[in-house]
Amino acid sequence: MAEVLVYVDHVDGAVRKPTLELLTLARRIGEPVALALGAGAADTAAVLAEHGAVKVLTADAPEFTEYLVVPKVDALQAAYDAVSPAAVLVPSSAEGKEIAARLAVRIGSGIITDAIDLEAGDEGPVATQAAFAASFTTKSRVSKGTPVITVKPNSAPVEAAPAAGAVEALAVTFGALATGTKVVSRTPRESTGRPELTEAAIVVSGGRGVNGAENFHIIEELADSLGAAVGASRAAVDAGWYPHSNQVGQTGKSVSPQLYIASGISGAIQHRAGMQTSKTIVAINKDAEAPIFDLVDYGVVGDLFAVVPQLTEEIKARKG
Amino acid sequence: MSLRIVVCVKYVPDATGDRHFADDLTVDRDDVDGLLSELDEYAVEQALQIADEADDAEITVLTVGPEDAKDALRKALSMGADKAIHVEDDDLHGTDVIGTSLVLAKAIEKAGYDLVITGMASTDGTMGVLPAILAERLGVPQVTLLSEVKVEDGTVTGRRDGDSASEQLEASLPAVVSVTDQSGEARYPSFKGIMAAKKKPVESWDLEELEIEADEVGLEGSWTAVDSAAQRPARTAGTIVKDEGEGGKALAEFLAGQKFI
Ligand SMILES: Cc1cc2nc3c(=O)[nH]c(=O)nc-3n(C[C@H](O)[C@H](O)[C@H](O)COP(=O)(O)OP(=O)(O)OC[C@H]3O[C@@H](n4cnc5c(N)ncnc54)[C@H](O)[C@@H]3O)c2cc1C
Ligand SMILES: Cc1cc2nc3c(=O)[nH]c(=O)nc-3n(C[C@H](O)[C@H](O)[C@H](O)COP(=O)(O)OP(=O)(O)OC[C@H]3O[C@@H](n4cnc5c(N)ncnc54)[C@H](O)[C@@H]3O)c2cc1C
Image (cartoon, rainbow over all chains, first blue to last red; front, side):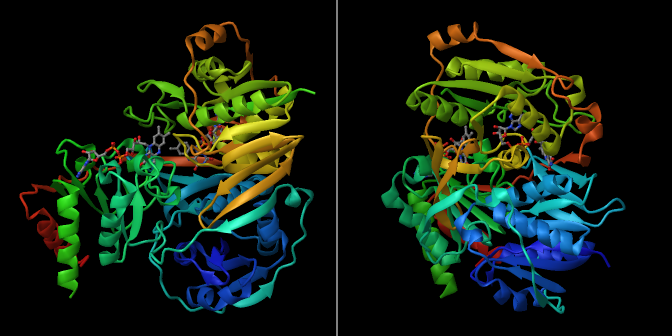
């Protein structure tokens, strides 16, 4: 069976959920071979094996943290040369897309970004993409070279499929460009303890209607009652009420949870671009004409300062 | 010495219009007004600010696109860029990102550059990969997704706010930089700027001038193929209730029914 190279997104050996989803998709088109880079790379092997990786290639070097993107492209290219895979799958993070794109040019292949589904086809893997703020669904293929495809979080179920997962060290030689962009310093983002926005099953977002940073606790309390991540519209972010890393939309994160709850958000096209593929959509807005109501499965026309706390209380009561 | 800045700008269908695909599954450009991708305005703005700080700088805006794409160049010129290059050729219709990056890279090399600035992503394709590919093709550092950028003494520095960390980056020129919409509001063209833009030079180049073969670009030459495009079925009308004091409870009931609670 053809091998499919899967780029692993992990933090010190803890594999992030989108990579496990990639393994599910990879198994539809071949046998997954995983590539894990950096500190803790070998620690990823057990969980990758449990989810179908027949082999786990690992490499660590200071270059991966001290320089931007290119050292990882060099490593992915080394893995590509070693495996000669039928396809290369990479998680659709900002960095993942850049790594994938540079590899595609190097190996003379086409690239598809932000796939939301993947299946085997007669002429190679077929990717589903959401276009124009998710108002269209397209099916595309890479028609030249080895398909390089980046896949959005929440695009496939995580499934157990035990495989060998034999760890092999990968030899990587860095090219002249690898040290081109130096990472002078790095300030890690503080963890809130809430789920990762792009991976969360439930996202609760607030917009301009929240009317001040001091009111965002209403949104956070609802989120916590549901074990959800917190999102924000750009209007709320630009006003300085919530960090940019929580922005949902075209220039923020794109989310695709089981449930999306928008409070005090009008539903501008750029916001919809980041949440329209959510399974169930709920909105609370005092304006019955707000465009967000065109998308909802359930909408409440009302003041969020009354509706949201009551909802939170009710959820807590029901959960006991 | 003069700092040569090339800003890549894309002409895109207006996101607030009714965007859709043409019969050949490329973007329909006839039914929706086009404009300079809003996210590329941030690139033009940063170029203007960098040029202001430099002793001597020249800003060239570059686009690959159909005839109407000149509108995007005019907008950038009216913001304050010095000159423009339009790569236009019938054979470009339907080019994918690998092809587009090839054309842009050749045009940038022909124009001459110390610094290339792009937006973070186009507002139509929204791939967000072109800047990284340009750096790969040009063989220069990529300093991408910056929310803050500075150029001094042949060095570019900037801040990249990523998923898990905020990074301070540094590279020597020549380099490719992309900037986010956090980098600073883009200025509106002034009346003076709009008048001045009319006199600024806009060069037109075709594929032959860039020594690119027709089969390296266009729909036929693409590295990717779109097999189908379907409008998402409109969401079935949801339940909308007016809050009369029990709206939160009713919503909880709905969520419980959907097994979210
Ligand atoms: C290039 C570009 C990129 C962009 N990227 C993004 C992006 O990534 N994400 C994004 O979100 N936006 C983005 N935008 C901005 C977008 O166009 C909108 O301006 C933004 O989404 C509006 O945010 P909002 O819905 O919170 O605010 P508004 O549009 O002002 O809506 C506020 C809503 O709150 C309601 N409201 C007010 N008070 C209450 C109350 N007490 N109770 C209930 N409801 C109340 C109002 O009725 C209104 O509908 C982008 C714009 C551009 C041009
Ligand atoms: C809905 C849709 C989906 C697509 N999916 C794919 C795909 O999966 N694979 C693929 O290969 N192609 C795809 N394309 C085609 C692709 O969008 C174009 O080839 C495009 O020019 C490059 O990608 P981008 O605009 O998404 O670039 P991005 O990487 O998002 O653009 C970043 C920056 O590059 C600059 N730039 C981009 N294009 C130009 C240009 N023509 N002229 C000047 N500067 C430019 C701008 O500064 C822009 O801000 C898609 C197009 C559409 C409309």
